[in-house]
Image (tube, rainbow, N blue to C red):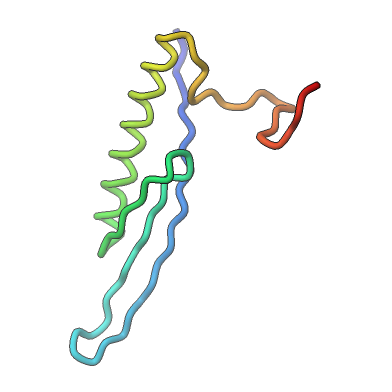
Length: 87
């Protein structure tokens, strides 16, 4: 069996906040597009841990769905589109 690729998309937002009492700090919001799950982190390292944890959970969920006969996590074939309609 060949390698299985599971695609995940994330939206990352980053703010640098200047505060006279605390100095400069960062706030990073990360959202997993497929599930809507999100987190707020204080560093890219913290955000990266969450991203990989989320990817792993998505892979496990996808494998369970595939075992049940579904098509979760499959990459669109050429010509497929999320917005296409079939008659």
